Length: 183
Image (tube, rainbow, N blue to C red):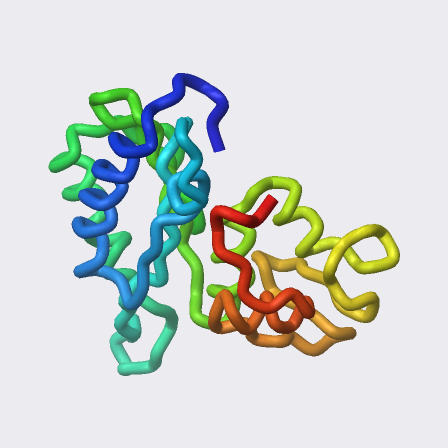
């Protein structure tokens, strides 16, 4: 999340839609998050959360040794087509600066943590912090749980999958809250 130059929401929405449409062919799922999703009048960056399409990577004996991400394979071509500069190119987060100066952050998720990450990346910052803080410390998270290891919810040693935003908000006891009302 950037605190640099501010852009009007309508401009950011237009650009976010273009970027999302470009990455979706390489993804199982994609969503505009952050201040654009919360409809803030001024936006400092565009944030997109994705789950890439993958295919098994096999060794010469046909043993599966990993996964190949369609998004990773297409990333360089996407950057070139956007005429953007890469600021950060990590496996879970990519940061670009488009020619118009709008920073673009693309976060890579997976089905088990999609719900948590959607809530956290949509924000607001204060709301997100309360979602991962236990109730005794002023948050919403049940006291016997913790969020760690890339936005996964744990109860003891057990990972609790949160495949949807609704499943995580329900788990917190909040029910659905429109993104614009997450303060």
